[in-house]
Length: 186
Ligand code: HEM
Image (tube, rainbow, N blue to C red; front, side):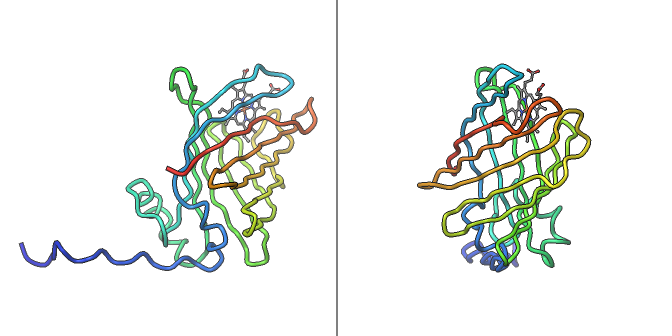
């Protein structure tokens, strides 16, 4: 067959949008374990995988599917696609999942929208510190939730490991930790 030269190098990925570059350390797939709790529930352990992707940087098969979906907007607007899935550590049975978009701005602020598998949706606003690799988010809107009033999320990369803490307030409980996890890049 003609036309395809087997030995030629693949085209280099397009450059990162400058607004995405400060968060490029997040791009890729992360896997690890977490612990959940709240004053009103029994604590639990879970496995987790996170994927941060961007049309200019990630080339795995799953990312390509995300990119196909993102193509129209990612060319014009800097955005990182985010997806998460969790499972019971003992059985591997699926637990909570969520996905959304992270929109960092050049001034160090960031807006994140997340849709959860429970039906709950979040609009989060906050800041990122590229040097210390910390993203701090505070819900501006929590929608379609029967109990949850407020959610905060803090993501931090230290020594190449990604940790996060999620806190929530419900109709009967003030802001308390619900989740913490530690993940490694895979
Ligand atoms: C319980 C919200 C993420 C697993 C709950 C409850 C709420 C909630 C409102 C009930 C608390 C109560 O009854 O007082 C959220 C929110 C999340 C989140 C807003 C994300 C921001 C997760 C994740 C997992 C998880 C990632 C699993 C890995 C559980 C479990 C319970 C629970 C196992 C206890 C259920 C039960 O005992 O019936 N969550 N959750 N949650 N959540 Fe989450």
